[in-house]
Amino acid sequence: MNSCQHAAAPMLRSTLVAMVTLTLYLLGNACLQNSSRRGVTARLKKLFLCSSTKAPSTTTQCNVEDELELSAARHRPEALEQLEAQTRFSRKELQILYRGFKNECPSGVVNEDTFKEIYSQFFPQGDASTYAHFLFDAFDTDHNGSVSFEDFVMGLSILLRGTVQEKLNWAFNLYDINKDGYITKEEMLDIIKSIYDMMGKCTYPTLKEETPRQHVEIFFQKMDKNRDGVVTIDEFIDCCQNDENIMKSMQLFENVI
Image (cartoon, rainbow, N blue to C red):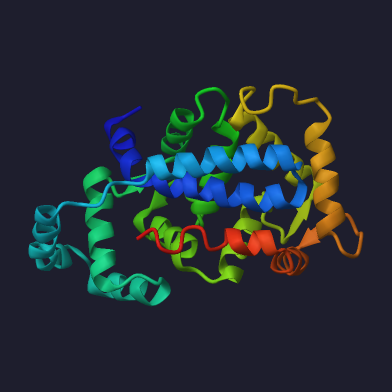
């Protein structure tokens, strides 16, 4: 792992663990058994709390605010104003986030190996590489093989301050692996298998080979309203919005920062 990857982990880890937590809440309410759902939920809540960065000291806050004008000079005003319009962060918040992102990864981008390294640290008993790949693709919106500050802050804005529909759109995009506007059974199977692989044998000691496919069938029975073998964005959002538990999960991270 290069120095950029190592340095990026402290800032990115809370966001990435929050993303997998949100993903699993959606999947859990759709297709996991109650016992599995409780185990996953408890573990990921703990992980998210542990991964959250401590609040900065008063001295640090003052130092950051004293340097905001210098930080602003490093931004292109057009880009900063555009991000302010596209996200739910204020100009000051974007300046602080940008400073942290650049300090942690001076190249200004994060690659897929960074995601895999972070998840391997949180899930050492499993293999998180496939799920990290899927999540990286969801962040890498322009599909150029790297996640820029703009990519990162757009995802963070959706997770922390987006509307329910925006969060569900993001989750749908993650499950729609080939980005054709539909979730197929094979795509959902790949996602569920990657989650089981990531959680590892410690979480699911009695997992049977057919269990992931059974969960896919449960998911489609709930989501695929017209029984055409695929789940559309409208079906996905409609089903989630009518599920009380999923709606509660959408509020998990609203006050994180």
